Amino acid sequence: MSKVPSPSSLPTTLTKRIPTDKIETPTDVLVTIFSDRIQILISQKSGKIGSMLSCNHEYSQIDNSHTFQVSNLLGKREDALPSVYARQILEQIVYLGDGMSNCPPLLLGITLEDKDGKGSSQEEFKIIVSEVISLYKYAVQTISSS
Image (cartoon, rainbow, N blue to C red; front, top):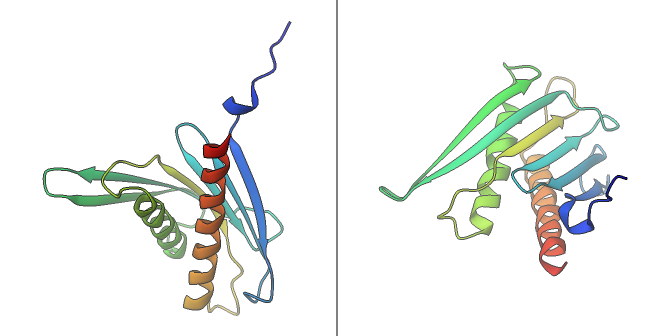
């Protein structure tokens, strides 16, 4: 006889679509919080993922410094934009807490539309990161209230 896991032992998963009134291309965001890591998926191509990155944070109490290490697990290594997203998202997650403790690793899956070779704009970057952090905060509140 198999046991059904209790709801509190399951990861918290939230999804959101960033509408076209905020950015040009509809963007799907999925945030899953596991006990040992955070998974975030960002896709502008119907849920497809082109790059998968791992981002880790370490805090040194000796010199009060933060170190972020981003590793490309899958996808184009020459494209720096996914690494920028991973670092910025994890950096903001770290500072949501006390900023002085280690944060669980971030696993980021991301695919963005290439707009005629221009990539995404700085404004689009800010909106996507802001929406991801907003969804992450809501997921953390959901965990805290259960």
